[in-house]
Length: 504
Image (cartoon, rainbow, N blue to C red; front, side, top):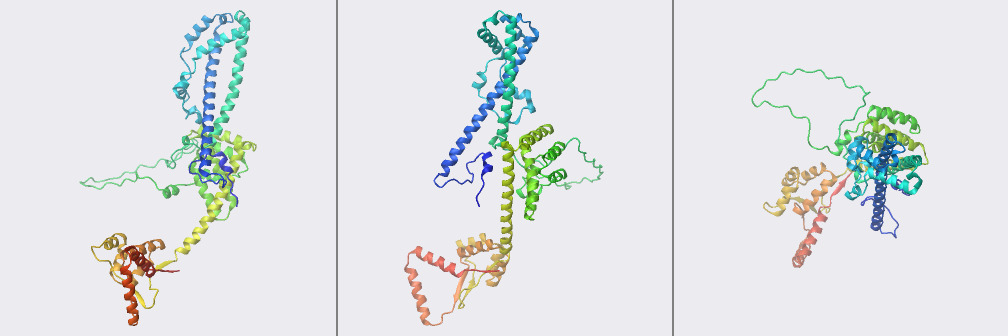
C-alpha cells in the first residue's frame, strides 16, 4: 500500500526522520539539503517578521508625532523648521528609537506568541534612527520634492496629511502580512516550541465554573511522645513514569461532551470551545486520542474518526494560543482557527484535513499491530522450556561448578536462588520445574549461563569395547587439535546436548 507523506509538507524535517527517497538519491544528502532549505526559509521568515515589526512600531510612533504637531501647531508654524523641532524635542524623547526589549516590557502578555522569540543584534537596533530625526527628514523631503511647500503653509499641510494617509495604508497592509507570516510560523514545529509535557496535574478553571465546597475541618487529638511516628509524606519527589502519566489521562465531562458534537458542525464546536476554553489543552487532546484507540480496537472506525477530529481541534487551538495561555488568548485562538478552517480553499484547512486522515490511518495501522501482538503474546504465554536428552542411551546430569572457579562465580551471580537450589539438588526434574515457571526469554538466557558454567553433563553407557576404542580415539584427536578448535567443538557439543524442548 503506498504511503502518503503529504502531512509532512507542513512539518519541518529532523535529522533522524524516517523518510523514503528515490533509490538514485542519497538519503543523507537529501536530508541535509532539506534541512538547509528549512533553515533558510525559517531565517528568511524571521527576517521578514522583524522588518515588519520594526516598520509597524516606527510608523505608529511617527503618526503619533505628526498628529501631535497638527493638533498643536498652526499651518504657518509648520513652515518654521526650528519651531517644529523645538516642540518635538520638548514633548517627546529626542533619543527615542526602536527598542525590542522595551517593546516586550510595554506589551507584556499582549505581545503575540510569534513575536516573543525574536532576536535582534546590537547592530540592528543601533541602525534605526531616532523618531524625531525621522520627522525632521520628512519635512525636509516634502520641501525638496515640492518646492512650493517651503513657502505655502496650506500646501505643506496638505502634503503632510497625504503622507499620513500613505502611512496608514502601509500599516494596514503590513499588519495583514504579519498575521499571515505568524500563522505560517505557528504551523511549523521548531526548537522554540518545545515544552515539557505532563508537568501539571491541574487544569485552569473558568470563573463561571462552580468552586468545590470547602471541606469541613476535622479535630484530631494526638499525644506527643518521644520518638513518636510521623505521618508519611504523600507527595513524592520522584518523576512519574510513562505508565503513571498515561494513567492520569482522564477525559473531563466537558471534553466528553465536546467529542460528541458532529465534526462537520464547525460552528457548534466553535461556540462550545468559546464557552469552555479550559479544555483546549494537550492533556485533554491526549485523553481523547486514547479513547479513539479504544473505539478502533472495538471496530468502530467512524466513532474513532469523530473523536480524532475533535481532539485535533483541541491540539491546534492549544498550539495556536501558546503555552500558559489566558482565557482571552484561547478564545482569540478559537475564533482565528475556525475562521481559517471554514474556508476549505486555504492551506490551513487542507493541512488540518490531511492531518485528520493521516492520524486515522495511523491509528488503524497501530490497532492492527496491537491485535496481532496480543494474539502472539497469548500464544507465547503457553510455551515453556524443558530439558531432556536427545539420545535414549544417555541422560543429562546436573552438577554445580566447583567452588572457587570462574564458572562458580558466574553460577552464583547470574542464576536465581531458585535455580541454584535446583542445580545443587542434582535433579533434572527440579531444574525443569523451575524452567516451567519462567518466560521463554528468561529461560533461554538461563540456558546460556548453563553453557558458560557447565552445570549440565551427559552420561551414557558403552555397549561394547569397539565404542570405547572409538571414543578414546576421538578424545586423543581433540587433545592434538589447537586450543581454539577444541573450544569450538566443545561449545558445539554443549549446544547439541542442551537443545531444549519447547512445550506448548
